[in-house]
Image (cartoon, rainbow, N blue to C red; front, side, top):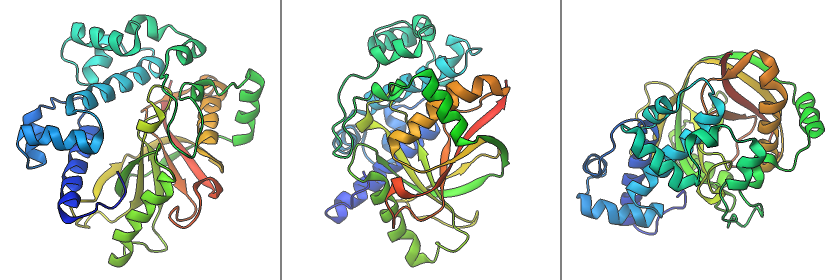
Length: 315
């Protein structure tokens, strides 16, 4: 969704839908009625559903349900002490029976059984549609294991030099896109720069940040969302086509790397299985970020040195 629309009407519609998508992302645990979302976009409910489907490729109900179930899948595997009912509640399900039916329909397995699966077993029931992006030719489920052996995981872990640091909060302006789109990361940052640079918002102090909103472990690769961000001052007023959010302060496990998106997920698997369990820490939130040493709008993603940050807390 980062490509410039063809006319002013399309641009206006895209801006409204982006506003709704950002609201859904930040309020997934809340009630998200059709009426509320339509009002945010200044459409009637009927018109909103039609426009949303055109721009997103799913109905609002389908989109919200998928995001909730995929988030719960992460919770079940990353937070073993979190009860299934609590995981469902934190992701917006008021009824456990409704959640269980929806989860089983989506993953073809109950939440209890899913939690007890090995990661190899998860890869066999994961998303099965092949990625349609031109830059990659992996089946999404392959990302979970990437055919890494225990020795390879341990080797990657020793190479990435993981540390734990305390980070301050960062306010960022952002634009979202999908990884399945060709050169999505570079092109999304280019769109962000076309807004920021004429307003003198890109300085020597600006930090360029990328956030993977979804992981291809449970989400079809073409539907995985990427958030291109730059740091901004707290008092900056943003236009409606640009979102803003704060990356929270706290402890982060961090390591430096360079390479493709595939390399990112290889390192995340190594981090999870080769370092985390022996570290005394556990993952605090499912969403981390990358801090770029150079402007991603001007250089290919895989050639930029990045610092990966994953929120952690004592185990």
